[in-house]
Amino acid sequence: MTALSRLSDKARALAPGLLLAVTVAFASLFIASRYGGPVMLYAILFGIAFNFLNEDPKTSAGIQFASKRVLQLGVVLLGASVTFSEIAELGWATALLVVAAVATTIAAGVLIGRGAGLSGPHATLSAGAVAICGASAAMAIASVLPQTKDSERNLILTVVGVTTLSTVAMVTYPSLAHLFGFSDMQAGVFLGATIHDVAQVIGAGYIVSDEAGAVAAIVKLMRVTLLAPAVFVIALAFSRHAGTDATGRAFPMFLFGFAALMAANSFGLVPDAFRDGIAGASRFCLVVAVSALGVKTALKELFEVGHRPVATLALQTAWLAVFVGLAVAFGKGVLPH
Image 1 (tube, rainbow, N blue to C red):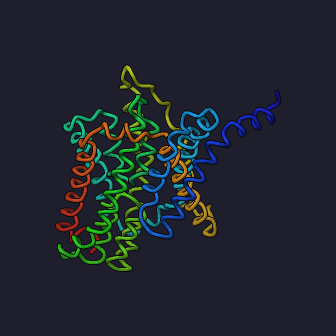
Image 2 (tube, rainbow, N blue to C red):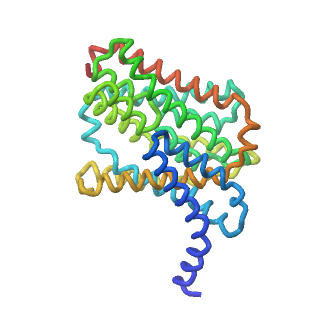
Image 3 (spheres, helix red, strand yellow):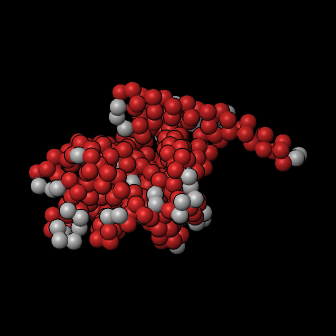
């Protein structure tokens, strides 16, 4: 059998399931653009409606491919959304605040999760999603955690939870920024450093003002740059501590793709005309991957988990908001104001 024929056979095996995930993604994007709301949540819910196809031999391979490989491609392409110069504009103090917020939220979040009775991987997944960039971070982190029978259920719960909390934050955090008397610049730093998903960060920022929206977007990109090093550290930590029912993961090489594309973008090697297209492709890949994850999820499994993961996500989110809010309020002499 030639390489071309093997590739053709592989494509035919993957096509039905991949097409299903792409169709669900398009439907989710259409509903979100027409009626508003978080596209990731739509993708999960629509995907769950097709859970009966997860075990079908015709679609299972493509669904698996979409939930893993398409996810990795989306994370790689996310690198084109970030440049070092954009980050440098807000100064070292803001960058230090973002690093400290991410690091402390992951550390405290793991302790919160363990205290609530979650497993180490689940607590880490939840904390990382809150600390960095919501659903995108959750899926990237999940790709390097030890795989157990509960891994996909925990991932879908985390994606649903951070997406919902991010939407709540988009509506409520601008009012908090006003209540505490933050300037537009301070509000942008606060919103960009605390809200989970990029779209909700931008939405919340522009509720305050155009300046706050622009600052919030840049601060959010600072957090996105920490995705690769955070996943690297998590991968190293768990590579030595896989449980007896877990399957260890090799180091995720796709993170080098993320870093390389971010570096290329920073040095002007990615034309401006292509940046928006690459960012859109990244977003679409992530929606396709979430759609496939939804197809792989049975509602019965979600309802069996209870309230602990939701309470954990809420407490982790509160930790991040309090940490950043205090830093912004008392850092007026150091942070942009």
